Image (tube, rainbow over all chains, first blue to last red; front, top):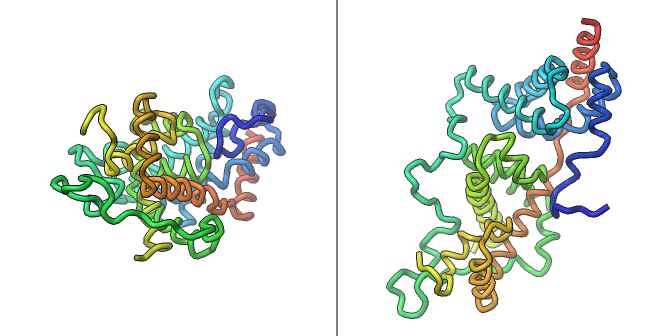
Length: 223
Length: 82
């Protein structure tokens, strides 16, 4: 089978419609299969909002109860995955607000309301405007991460760096980077679930990825 | 930002995601790739962004603990009885 979207993990299996029909008929095996398929990514997303792993698990459970309550009304033409994750995000946000967390969830996509650009790379690493040779070109260029960076990236230590870098991202960046790059969703799926525009999605993705790259650089090339 | 002239490195790093997403207009792709062809530093930078994306895709998956799974199945059974 041809994979049209490189990087993306399989997301919309052909058998899903059959599973959803079976769920409507209250088939337990179909329910278990859908849970098995989606509970992992749901848990990862829920953890972004929850103060503990236990709360995240509860939110995932609540979302599945929402699915059972709403499955009769679910339009088979729309994507089950989008519908499911919209339920999850709504529950997770409601729960977090109830628990008076201070992260401004409503601000997804508008984290830079003043329009002040957060650069991908600190400006100090480029030559200044008045540089006689090459203004705005690299002054402190990135250095290659060794002969086999792919291998280094697989180490537990590096994976921990990446995981911590995600946690440190602003909420909107964290959501987009997690869904796009960790879970392998398409841009369209992310826009649908988070209710953001495509260009907004790209800005958040860009800032988030840039920060993850910077964290890797600090780890792999501390200078 | 300058329009039409060669890209600076500082401008290029802000276009990397649009480039990888296929969201740059063709003319901008031309400027982007022309800069890359003559700037090894930006080549390294782009490679590192790709490595960061790869690393993100290799984070281990989460799984719902068995206990939570059992609770869900119990909820399902309650639901089927309604």
